Image 1 (cartoon, rainbow, N blue to C red):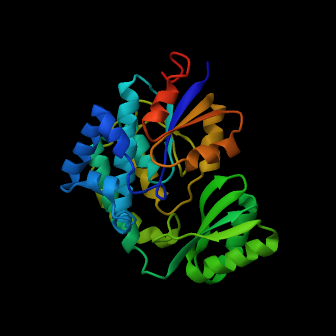
Image 2: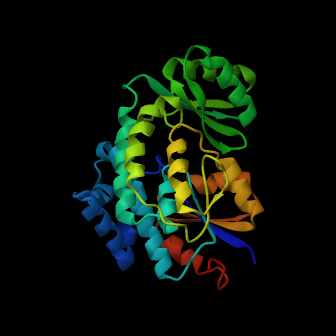
Length: 314
């Protein structure tokens, strides 16, 4: 029998109304949202359920909102007896994965990512940074393009999402140069992203430095199930190693292709995306097409898991 990985989405999956259905039907989900509200001292759950969208899109709100929603859904899944052999998360989702693996409690995780979101938002003045998705070129070609464009500004791969999809980040002008070079190189599409900051590049160094103090104050427990990390695409089991991994993640790319490939190589053939949206499910299908993929963001997703063979998600 194969193995199962729970994977958790990052920023960009938020929408008003997320988590409302699962909150209304699952006691474990209600308890998770209530814990997040208490930890932050304001009704984060109401923001998740009702918006307004402009507040939900603020990075310092988006990050705890997605984490709390994902962990509430996970609580409902676990209430049904489902477990995973591995966890992984995309950017912010790595914090959710760590909470899922028992390294962090929900209250600590939600406070941590609220600070992380604020630091990332404040790291770069508005209008300086940009991100763009490059479709139709492999990651090596995109990295080469970025190196050339970075001679007069910061630009680098930020998210290596699929074999032919890489997101770049950096100074606005340098991202524009790299985008034009990618088109000339044969990219099928270049899509500027509507983001509040250029994540996962050296411009995030001030956020990394501020986050370091928060991470230093936390004791990370050893993981109950292994995590495949963003920065190294390698298994992490020791709580002592978590802090360094999360710190480097702020300024280094999310190596999602390698994360999924390495999970598949470890015997994972079933990926369950836990949280709002279906972005990661789509990426997994492109990286490991032979694997089963499931998306759980509401009660129908949980009910669909019942079709799996007993013990399939342990």
